[in-house]
Length: 583
DNA sequence: ATAGGGTTAG
Image (cartoon, rainbow, N blue to C red):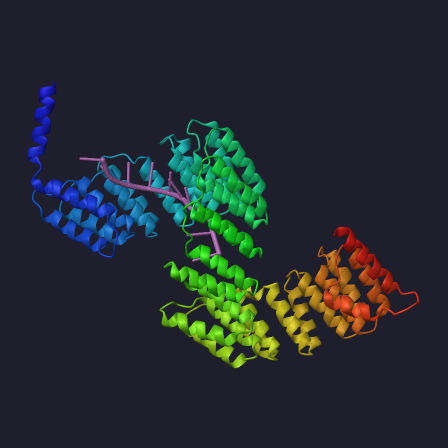
């Protein structure tokens, strides 16, 4: 028997011409290759293989076409299959599955389904990979409902026994469209069945829960998963750390990092970047720098995201010098700053009223070949308006549109605010009226800017009209909208109306905040409505809000130097006692 | 031996 087998092997190896192994070698080296000529080299090899007589087997061709697919050249891959068919080389199920995948990636799910018929015609049966590719195709086409229906049908009619990949595809699809609870249901279903979920399926749901702001649910699921003996990996921990950070729970996030290392899971650069970024956004660049040191100690190299986060952190604090130092440091380490890195700096310069430096950098990065994005332009626009140069701003806005960059809601906020601040309220309103997106036309924030702008331009009636319009549209004014309107009423001496609105606002379930109280007290004091101001001052303190420095200064001026009973003094004394207690 | 899912970060 041994003898027969040996003869068989021998026969096999002599039958394959020398070029078979030669092609195998070239396919293998292409699979591992990277570089700009990879696709061209693969096509060249494909041509050579098709010219060979007898024609190469379908396995090698599948391998080669997979190289093209991995490079996301789906239409090229499909055209190669077409040539295989034209040569009369028989394909197999693998080949058709690859084709289905290509069609799905090209947003042609229908073609994918049509290939089911080809599979049957050729005497094959679709397998798990076939169905999973189609389910994934539906997910890619944002047809998650249909994907779930197909999955259920396969299950109901016992067409196939889903594996972890198929469950995972459906779970990911559900998470993608925000149906986290359905995804969780499916995960539970897996737990109760024979195909148990792995860490990837748990990760999808944990991450989705975090994005739904349900971090504690995510943590619970994480615990349950561990209890079931499924080991968390770096992605599980990174998702949780990210979720915690988004909730301002950086301390717990940092503890999670320690936990993961104790469990033997090594954090990646990305894991650290989440923390670095969170610390920076929260204003504590010091902690961020410590996190960077910690990652370096573990042999991880900070990347462009790490450095950009630090730069952004320093810029947010107005410490541009420090930000510039970080930039120099990263360049020294051969890490190339990208547009996001520079956006932080440009924004920093603009906020610091160093518009010339911002303009210079804006030009500089373009000379370097970087393309400014919406954020770059928006920052520049804000800087130009803030420096009182609306003409340059509108020129830049035109340039941005000429380049085909679509302004986003932030851009419009900056534009409207900038115009109003530069006494161009009617231009701002005209721009707002020209907006075509429903989302923008119904943005309370944009209304607030216009209302505030008109009021500051001394046109309270227009401001009130806009507020009415906002309510008539059925939009819910937020606390900022009410604040602006109340201050409009106060400035016009219409205190009764201001009071009515305040009541109406609380009826609508919108509670006054610190800013609102400060505005009211300040406006009342400006109009010498001392008693009303005292009432509001007391009310705000009772609700736990502090007068800001402007309010405080105004109030202090009203306290008589010596003797005399003063309600203001009592209030302020009470306030300082409270403060002392807190310290 | 060749095919299908995923994944965290600005």
